[in-house]
Length: 58
Ligand SMILES: [Zn+2]
Image (cartoon, rainbow, N blue to C red; front, side, top):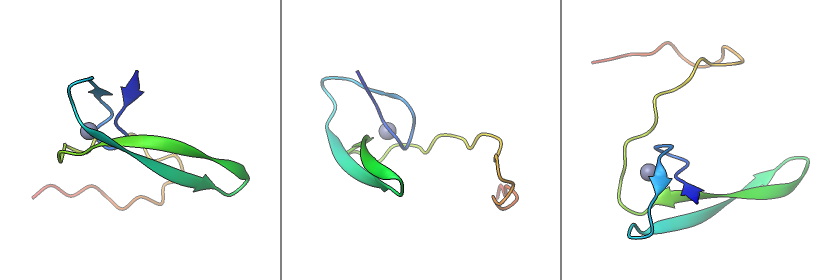
């Protein structure tokens, strides 16, 4: 089972996805998958570092 790294939802077998390699600073990178079709970005969780800008809805 794969999860889309953008919307956080499952990628079902009938959906197209694209793998992306994310290099990690400490060594082995990871591969994430994104839907090929544009999907909605998952809502941001609480920012751990607080460096995220204030949420703006408009
Ligand atoms: Zn997605």
